[in-house]
Amino acid sequence: MELRGQRRSYTMTKPTLQQAVTVWVRVALLSFGGPAAQIAVMHRIVVEEKRWVDEPRFMHALNFCMLLPGPEAQQLATYLGWLMHGVRGGLIAGTLFILPGFLAILALSFLYAYLLDVSLVAALFFGLKAAVLALVLLAVKKIASKALITRPLAVICAVSFIAIAIFDVPFPLIIAAAASVGYLWTKQRPTWLGDTLLPAGGLRPQAVSMISTLRVLLIGCFIWVLPLMLMLPMLGSDHVLITEALFFSKVAVVTFGGAYSVLAYIAQQAVDVYQWLLPGEMLDGLGMAESTPGPLIQVVQFVGFMAAFRDAAPFSPPVAAVLGSLVTTWAVFVPCFVFVFAGAPHIERLRHNMAIAGALRGITAAVVGVIASLSLWFASHVLFAEHRVVNFAGAGLSLPIPASMDFVSLSLLAGALLALLKLNWGIGRVLIGTVAAGAGLDLFLG
Image 1 (cartoon, helix red, strand yellow):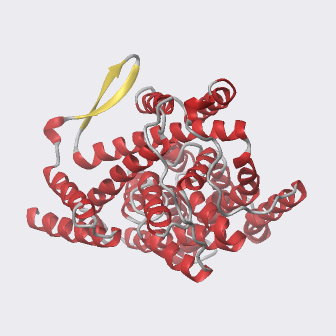
Image 2: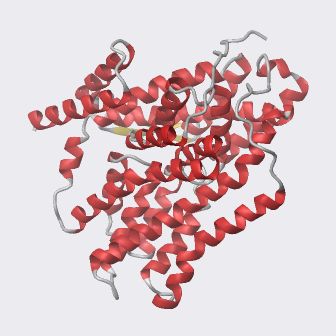
Image 3: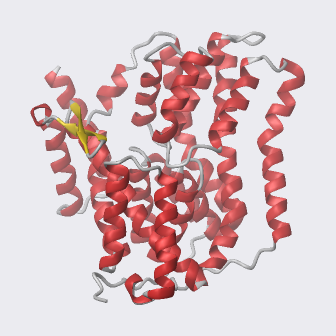
């Protein structure tokens, strides 16, 4: 079987915890634009720039995180932090990934609640999405060149892309099918999966027992429900903070396939069932989440903030709002740490199992297709202002209207690509430059 590319050799280095913290802060501050962009930033910094993790190990971790409910990029950061410095490193990386977005949305929520103009934020970050799109496009190209090393793997990628982008096939089904195909090919046609199935060597965590895994699950679940146990006797089961804790705990374990797969459900429950938000306010919260660093699912913080702000007793509205933000963020993200810390040691051990490695290589190809689909959706909404739904093979396909092309965003995208490819600018410099250019153009054009 002809190979489409060869792996680049890596000389991996293990950073000190202080070095890792500095980099995780940098990753967190640059984590705009949703999972595809955030994964791209991590890949560029941790794999290409620092060479702390090699390509196979990064993709292996990504495959596992894509299988979990919750924000895959935040879980990937947690996994990589754990890989280098254990539970302490995972806690630091995962928490730092959330923190900038939490603080930003908290500040914007206060502005929103007190009727100040948050449209200034949209103007400030007008150019941001174009820069993020440039990073995403380059990352998809680079990851695909590393992962799709044979034509059969490219076929899995293409089929996965079509399945999710056109026919809206459920994400778990796509991953399960890709894993099954990879597993079968390992048994029947192993050369279809590349020159070697075993990932390159590197950091090798010690073997883990089921007892230690059970301990992690028990401790993690106790920490997860601890705020609820403390609040329930004081506030009663009908209080808004208790309702938020229960509802968003349920959300945390059903968000397979990323935030977009569950946002419609959250919006419907928040507006129609619990009446926490007014119609249209969910879109305002989503705009905040898209304009700030961190996972898109952080929009739940805005929901929790507004619900507690409007039903504050026995607290003052500002205090209740902060508590609502904390409760929802805790309920959604603590399980992410538990899933990673419980599962990652076993996943690492399975790296050297041929059949499992084949299944994960199939997942890798499918993940590239899914990321490419997310990237295409992102590009379509950055570059075109209007879309229409057309019927294609029985599926509703959203297509951009060519006349609605945003030539300003296209120009900013071209400038960002030029800076990255030809001028060798760093990520931070590109983001700052496009934000400044976008804000200036937005103000100039009125």
